[in-house]
Image 1: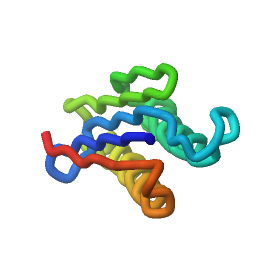
Image 2 (image 1 turned 180 degrees about the vertical axis):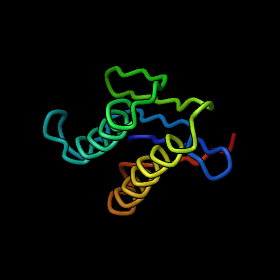
Image 3 (image 1 turned 90 degrees about the vertical axis):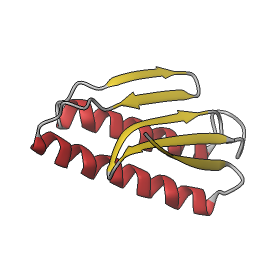
Image 4 (image 1 turned 90 degrees about the horizontal axis):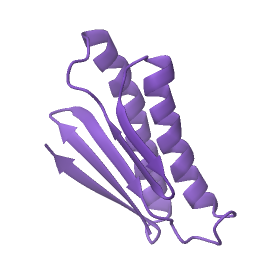
Length: 109
């Protein structure tokens, strides 16, 4: 099962972690795991390459962590919120479709 933890401070997502393989099918042909990985990586790349903010992150086998800094400008915060909210909504949609393979944990910090 893949566990997705989303950390919020007020209305802003400030951190997310994605951990574990979904187990939907064999590693390498698991479309659910691939979807989760693509969304998590896409968001990380959008934050660093499009919004141009320096985030803390770690990526390893079956693990991704992204920490958004507190000191964003108003425009950076707005753009990062759009990316992170879209990521969260996509994860929620995937969780609805594949409940036995994905769990989302919402945390308030």
